[in-house]
Length: 416
Ligand SMILES: [Zn+2]
Image (cartoon, rainbow, N blue to C red; front, side, top):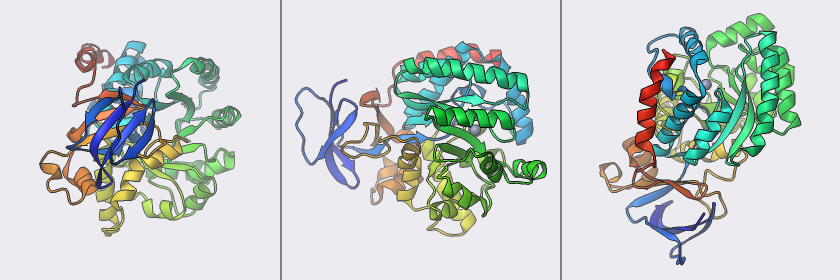
C-alpha cells in the first residue's frame, strides 16, 4: 500500500488537500506535499465518504428483473425456487457483479446476507471492498435443516479466520417468520459468545406483523425481546411496521435500524418508515438498497433521494429529512452500526472515500453541493473510489469490468 495525495479537492465547502497513508486518511490541510505519493488532481472534484450499504443480498444481481410486478410472498416463492440452483461459480460472479455496481455507484462497505459466504468473500476480496458477511440461518422450521445449518456455521466460522480482514464474519437470522425459535436462540447465543454482529429482517410487511401477533400474541420486535436476542449487536433491516410501543424496546436494546425504501416501495411492503421517531428515541438509522431481485440496483444515491422524498412526502414536512442527516444515514451511521471508523472524511479515519466529478450540469451552479449530489446528479458522477487506502476505480474505470459482464452473461441462465 502506498500513499495517495488528492490535491485541491472540494471538501465540506473548501478546497483542501487530502493525504492517505496506507489505509488511513492521515492529513487534511490547505496544502500538503508528500514525496513518492500517487497524486490525484482533485480540482474539478468533491470528496465524500464512501457509502455504506447496510442491507443487501449481493449475488441477487443474477436475479435482476426475474419476477416483476408480483406480491412479496409470490416473489419469495419464485426466488426460493431459484436459489437451490446457485453454485459457487454463480455466487462468485454474481457477487463480483454486485461489487462492480457498488464501486461504480460509490459504495465502499456493505452488509451482505446471502449464500456460500466463503465464495462470496473471495469475490469481495478480489474487488477490494469492505464487508460484513453473515452466515444465514433460514430453517423454515425444519429441525434437520436447523442441525445442518449449525454444523455449517461452525465450519465457516473457523474458516473465516483466514479471510481477508476487510471482510468480517457475522450471523444472520433471516426473519422471525422463517427461522425456528430454537435456531434463533442458538444463533444469537453463538453470536454473543464470539462477539459477532447479528443481521435480521424485521417487520418488513404488515402480514408479517399480523401473523406474528396471531401466532405469538406479540409484534415481531416484542417476540424477539421475549427470546432475549435484542441487543446492540443486532442490525434490523426494514422496520416498516414497527409500532409506537416497539420503538422504546428497540431503543433500550440499542438495536441498529436499516431503511430500504426502494425495495419496500417496489414490493409494496409500505413506506411510512418512522425516521423521526427512531431518531428521537436515539436509534442509529442507516440506509440499504436490499438485493437486486427486489430493488433492481445497489445505488445508494438513488436510495438517499427516494428516502428523502418519501419522508418529506408522507410527513407533509419539508424538514423531515435534512441533507446532512441523509448523508449520515448513507455513510457514518452504517459505519457506526458496524463498529467501523469509516463513513467520514476526517484525519484518522479509514481511507474509504469517493471523488465526485462536479464538472457537469448537475453541479452548476454549486450553491449547495449535497443538494446537487442527491437531487440533481445520479451516480454516474462517481469518478474515483478508494477503499481501505487502495484505488478501486479511477476515471470510472474498474479493473476486470468487461470480464465480469461477459462471465455473468454466459452463466446466469442456469438459474431459470
Ligand atoms: Zn433483504
